[in-house]
Figure 1 (cartoon, rainbow, N blue to C red):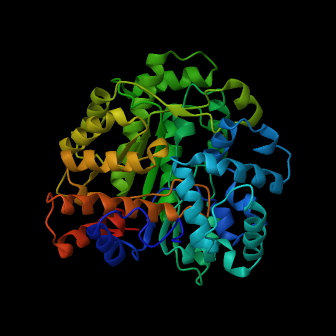
Figure 2 (tube, rainbow, N blue to C red):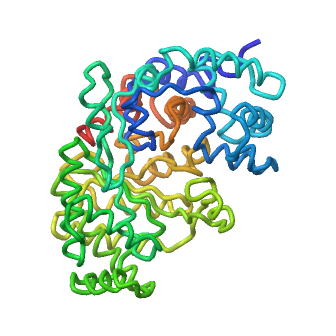
Length: 466
């Protein structure tokens, strides 16, 4: 009997099989957005057991376990790792139709050569087999990354990060994967958050000067961006609920910043003015540095107050927003483009209803500087599954060029998540292969194979130039 994860998994036509096995399969991975810990990479961490490397910090799995009514103590609480793993094993058979089922078994196959389906009956055998392998040197983080054929990793880092771990990684000549930071300034932008002033004080400590006014904030952020640039950073990343665009002078932004520093209430319009001015400043800064700007748009976060108080952010209580996008997005991009200071930009939206808004907007601001300067980013978060990926790629192809797409990113905290790139590539090859089988694309494998290789790796390499 053929195992569930087999060589032609998700490849449903002959053209797809040729495209995947001859072109996509062996391409390196360019992971330009993830949440891996640079400390874990620098220290070449060895995980104690399968739950530690697989369940800790994975809010996708946590949400699935909560759906099954599992007690929080067995998810994020004080239960042992083995107890938590047993509960996850109980949940996995119920995830059929969810990408977690595919990811789970791809990871078990690729890293541990396990063909068994994970469930209550197989859990103990799988637990012991995986833990035996995890205790060996070949399962330390750096080896896992190299075994996954990863060429470049861009972590996600706050401006106040000293980047010590990145410097340590860079000094390690035996580790061949390039690891660089990505600049995530959200905490300096989110002026209405209760911890805003505390964060500005911390930023001031890092740059060695008190930040008493808006000009000093801009100088501090530029200081940190240039520090990141010297450490190899070529990408920024903004997580924003909505694209801000309210005309705002520097003087207005300064007054709003002063109000916040004085502990005064900021109105919604003032918040959007401040965010607009600061985003535009940062966009121009990124353009001057030759960076790409990533905008992750449309997550409404921390919706469960009770669980946020108990567990904090990034624990599985975020969801998709609905909001106006077309007008503020085009105005924001246009404002930067007016003075030719629009950086390379990647747009992601959590709500797929906006795919055509983004797909049409990117065509307004392309440039001779680079192939696909403004990108429609890959299916993100809740869209990081078969239907979401196909929808994003099909919509991009209909409105622009799939051939210019910079492809997949991992967007994960787990060192076992790299098979998501394989998952994406199989879906990509099956999609293009289906066009061949239906006569909608030529049976020219040199042409199509080159496109598959570009989307899998080459386009990202040329786009970021890390």
